[in-house]
Length: 460
Image (cartoon, rainbow, N blue to C red; front, side, top):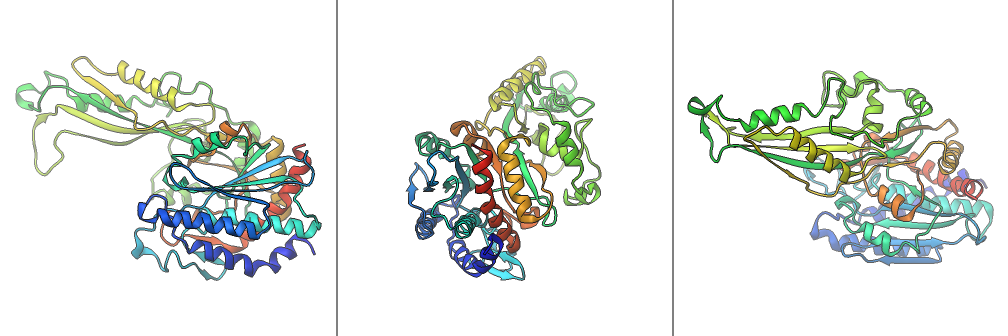
């Protein structure tokens, strides 16, 4: 029996078990469901014990629990792999837009619908089938690499306690590589690997002029208008080529290689169709010299998220407003630090605040760093071979514009990241009617079965 035959022979049991786990409403962002998140952790721990993992533990945090499981390789010198995912899920509102109960998973053709099917229970779950398939075909009692599963319980609510957990358990999590199964492929018929995710940080700015709103007939044109100052400041965030003008903003940015640009260009990207998915946007726009995919995957950005001040109600009110406010977010790429961006923004604001106006910058949070895996690294190349064996075709590379705890994993565990995932952009993650393509989950399991074999050779 080969890996494919084993997986197909165990298909029914695999999906029956997955549905049982999906039925637990483990919504970490809703305190009313925190008990369900714990129940989800306990269910997974029990399941992994039943699958043969010699070590399975529920790890408590100051918030919600994670699950850790370890299956040592027979060879004590074999590479060690941490597989990361999360068992908590997003809220389901608006509930009226679901066609089925989000926590009563249902099959429709080759699709499985329900919250968590793709993000991320389904994708972390395929590893269990992949491990069993590899062992069954090899006849071994242990995998060719030491496998450590780490399944978080707070990813959908910001991973607030995750960095602390990683630091506390760093010795237990020591590894040669971290596999992430919480991203997407380009398409079902265009398998791909993500090699990086952008980070993010946010700032808020307020500009203050006079102590009160002023009559524009008596004072307009003779005193500073904070809204005018804000408009000029925000307009100055970008130059004519769409580049961000903060001092030192691009210092350290890891550039795209020629090979990456060539591989991105081979993806079947239809910009006109993409613009329709972007709310019927009328044109592509961004930093000069880069394609749309390069801009959203590998280049940093600054976006004005909101701006307000003065009179915004019905009718006219001819005033010089006393204050103006704005919210701005920065998407960051490898080589950028949120703290450095904060400092650069504060310097930019100080340099662009006119006399008679007082500025105040607020930083709502620390931000999330970007993560990046070079496509020529041993781990990425090994994972690419594993996926190509499963899919029977070339695997291309992508990046993603979103962000998560991946940078913390890489930094704290001091290990490179490798993304092996089979979700699709149309899986409606975080939205009503979330689904996963069932054949792709099985391909994920097959990829995982080959992955350990490839890692055993490539990472020594």
